[in-house]
Length: 149
Image 1 (cartoon, rainbow, N blue to C red):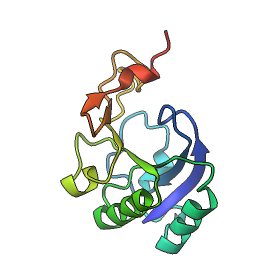
Image 2: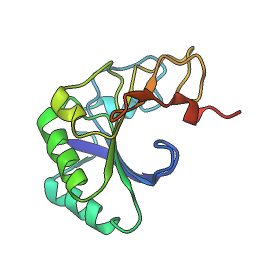
Image 3: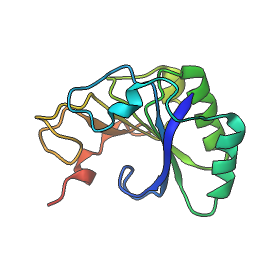
Image 4: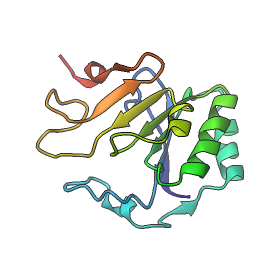
């Protein structure tokens, strides 16, 4: 599994400081995608388990969540990294353009963002979006956390 970038982000998971990995090889190719460079397979650096562990250890006192922007097409690798994140007391989140993902991956997530990007409907901060940000423990949609009053 290759990642194009790593960032510490504050807005993608409300109330959390998240370690964000943008995974390359996205098969969806949404019209109007803001990250078409993520469509190419093997774009960026290989995210080995050792590299991933280094990130988790380095940010253990700062971050509270691990966020994958894509990667569900690498089911086994993603599962292992989510499980490891939870074992290190991180919350977990996946942003996917799919409607759903495997039950094994869902079981390792705290939150999931689902739904393809549709430019006319907007993202999570739009009241007309087709995307959903869901807390899996309660199965509650939390899109309201992204909409400014």
